[in-house]
Amino acid sequence: MPEVTLVDRGRVRADRAYVVDGASMASAAEPEPEHTRVEFVVWNAVVEADGRTYLWDTGVPTDAAEYWPDPLYGAFEAHDANEHPLEGDLAHAGYDLADIDAVVMSHLHLDHAGELDAFAGTDTPVYVHRDELQFAFYSAHTDEGSIAYLASDFDGDLNWRVVHRHRHTLAEGFELLHLPGHTPGLLGARIETPEGTLLVAGDECYVDANYAEGAPLGPGLLWSERDWRESLETLRELERRTDADVLYGHDLDRFETLAARY
Image 1 (tube, one colour):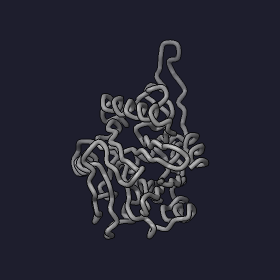
Image 2 (cartoon, one colour):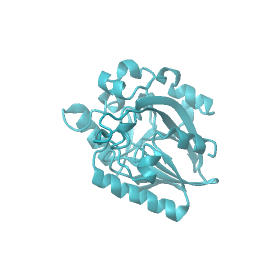
Image 3 (cartoon, helix red, strand yellow):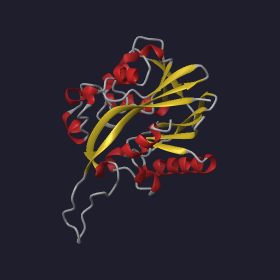
Image 4 (spheres, helix red, strand yellow):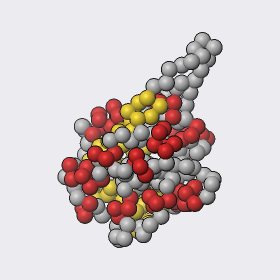
């Protein structure tokens, strides 16, 4: 059965209203609501399955403060990124970059693809959904799409392996799930581990309120609310059928709980 190791890649500070729609909405009773800045976790995962070692996402670059456009860094302050190089955090978890047989990109936003260039010029397969790859290049090279894609993160000599369907089996007990909404090609996963089923929701649900309460992401983080709600129900149905643990994209409490279990 697959084994999962969750890797802590640091913190991002951001207004809660970015990730929970309406979190700081004004009203007649409260015309000037307080805004809450929250510490969100950045994480990667290492999945060992069928004799191969997979890396889930590559995280935030160590030079995010200089590399990310000012408006994005101002909104999503990756304040300790320089303390969390991919190679160092992998080493802390007991792995080397050379141990990685393949990379799975949940999506190509700048906080998930930041050190993907570590695999440029190698034959390491990089799995990504077709819709994500197309939208990322479209966004990064035109004035349309989303500003959260930086061409230099992924426009290099990478060994892309394109996922075309809504489900794709990488190994026994390790299945990729297409969960559009946050982006067109977001990937999650169903992983059958000795500890039980782990459902990787990723950025389909940044925090528990998105999943448990059905509160959408803020408008700036939502490519399609209709698709997002359909993907949410896909995850909820899988959780009901498998009694799974659900791992969100940036919820610190949930990450710490599951990191102690897996």
